[in-house]
Amino acid sequence: MDGNIATFSEFARMLGVKPSAVTALKKADRLVLTADGKHLLVAESQQRMRDTSDPSKAGVVERHAATRTARQGEGEDAAQDDDGEPVDDAGDAATGEVGRYQSSRARREHYLALSAQRDYELEIGKLMVAADVVAAVSSTLTVLRTTLERLPDVLGPQLAAENDEGRVRAVLVDAIEHALEDTARQFATLAKREDA
Image (tube, rainbow, N blue to C red):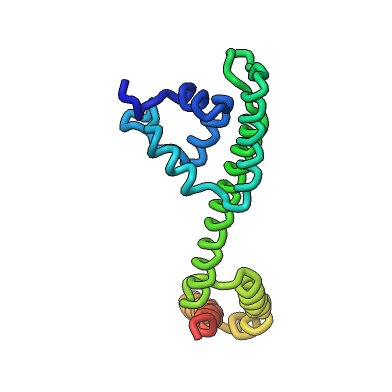
């Protein structure tokens, strides 16, 4: 295999970390993978890790590297996990912190973009403030309900004297149509007010 291509566990050994740390780097999109996604490009991945590292964690990374070097210099046997892989809790913690930082930053950017989109759509009149819409709809429906509830009192005497069923129907249709037109006019006024 090409010297620049490695498996995930090989790359973990190169870095002196657990394979789970490499998995976290992959999930954080901090590795450069081969076309099939089964291996990674070592030099490119190391460069991407440097490019995407959190500058505020540089001191932590240096301390962990110094600790690893000191352990190796003292001849300490590196601890191993159940799979016989070297364990570097400090490096793993640093990688986890960087992964969490990258994830939090991406989430923050996503919500900032959504907020900017909402503000823009409010400004151009594509969206309306929910509380304003609820208040306007409630007010309009209250007026409609009051108008409909008054119809028997207003139309009752007029219709009682009417013998022609067609005329009764026409009077009712006119009254209902008038109430619906008022409602539509109030909704149109709300839309114009939001556009202004």
